[in-house]
Length: 73
Image (cartoon, rainbow, N blue to C red; front, side, top):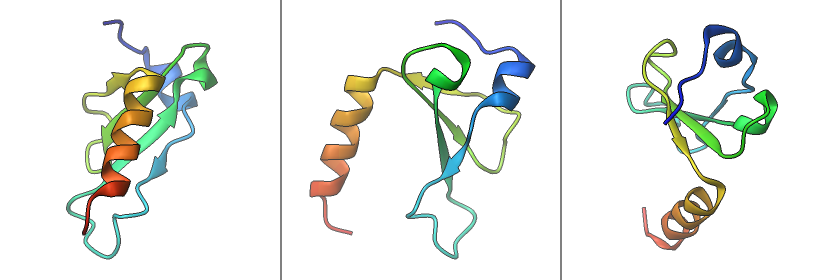
């Protein structure tokens, strides 16, 4: 796995999960890695923007989203 340098991290267009709601203690943010010339999706804890980033392939992320949409909340 490759890491992102600080400039690449800052260039990512982060979006907070729509399920974050009023409870700000359990939020994730996602960003397309295409913004920095890579393929996949970056995922991070919104409370720790300088913390670790998980990089996920497009197929794996699509499968994850599909799975979560089938679950009841």
